[in-house]
Length: 356
Figure 1 (cartoon, helix red, strand yellow):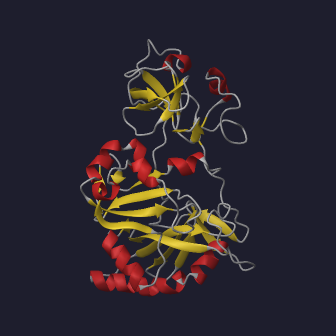
Figure 2 (cartoon, helix red, strand yellow):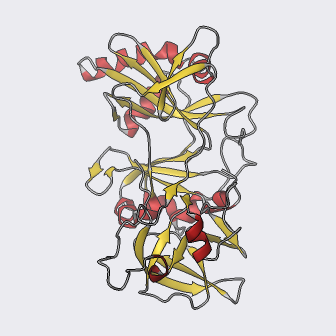
Figure 3 (cartoon, helix red, strand yellow):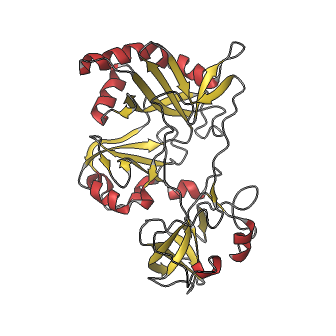
């Protein structure tokens, strides 16, 4: 599950705003997000409460911070990436003593999670309507899919700089997965739910599994994986992004729905990048746009920062800004801090201009 937390952080850098005399830019020490602050409001080394994007703030907090009517969402209570006088701002910071009455005498520390204490919750996009199927719990060996944001894991990004990586375009759509079990049973799922079919209608996800050919390809895909490994496997899952008509406002302006695969899992564990690409090619499974498949992150970035490199136009529709990028090492590995090593960098330009 991706990290969401309102935390106590230390200001690491403050610099001039490019287009506003009364504003400045800042960052905290543990993240790469930049945000706008009032000029002179914070100095380097100050401790602050950092509210990340997608924070839903209580009304009392909004009033204390003077943010009435300035946040996003129907209730004007959601912290969202915005552009303020031309500069991207991701998150809100506040003086801890303003929100934590026992700040001076309390036992608080840098990095502490104060989400629950401040009554903050995370914004979740509304579920996709499901009138043509029953939503039930995810089946065995299919978990909720989340990717951590690179901004919170600066050290991890640095560790990937000289490692061969696989970089793909992050698509603006809805999560899709199709899974085949040992007995041949097939499950089609959204991000959090399995979609059980009903007799009277065909759910869009089931229709996509059929029209994309995935439903028919899954038995042969599983058989090929078993042949390559020399052993039977319990379950094979193809994960992808559902895009097109009626999905997230049809961001890419496509005439029909499509599924773009980004991962294959065996017994709940992702296969390596080379295996994924080879299987996708062999079974003619359409993938998300691949931006780099055998290059170090440092080579791909050149002189760009990761945030700068995430900006650009989508390869699905070049008239639309891409949502961002996803980066993983070519060979799967794990680290204690994050678990599986895979990170996303959402484009600040996209976020500042998006309603999603």
